[in-house]
Image (cartoon, rainbow, N blue to C red; front, side, top):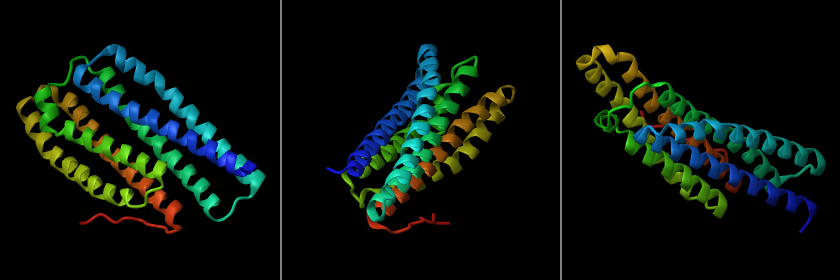
Amino acid sequence: MTHLETELQFLKSSIIEMWNLVVNQLSRSREALESNDRDLINEILANEKRVDAFELKINMDCENILALFNPVANDLRLILAVLKINYNLERIGDYANGITKILRDEEEQFELEHIKTLRLPEMYATALKMLQDSLEAFEKENNQIPRTIFKYDEKLDKYNRNASIAIAEIIQNRPKSTIKYLNLLSINRKLERVGDQIKNISEEIIFYLEAKVLRYKKKK
């Protein structure tokens, strides 16, 4: 194994570790939404520093490899894909952190009934499946899995569109709690944006594996 191959293998291991950390952050934010566990909320917020540190380290590793080895072809595509995936993963970590901050700042727990009305359990399940599938695609260098992820992103978009109607009805019945339920809608919005980031990751995986730029257009 050449020095470059060793560095690339280490880079892949690092981005996979970052991926798993972000999966964990998103999954734990779901647990926090359902349980309102204050200790868990604080742990998630503290872990955001690890996500940020990972992003900086991976960016530096990519820059060093580019400067030292001047990679080409598939090796270059891998590094460029990792740079962009790294950014997308950091953004997903930010959204998980943003959701957790909403939970931290709410004095009362969101009612399970309203969580279900906004389809947040389904949104979390969909987003986590997309994220885990994208990781599997990267690890196994499978160019078919990313294409299935685009359909799941459309599901998240649909849940998001329907949520605005649902939250308006809730607020109409409880006008004194308007801010609280707008915050609940904000969680919905963040999960929809998580889906957008994972869609971008899927496009980068296809670029790396097929040397093809793919920008998936949503159906209108």
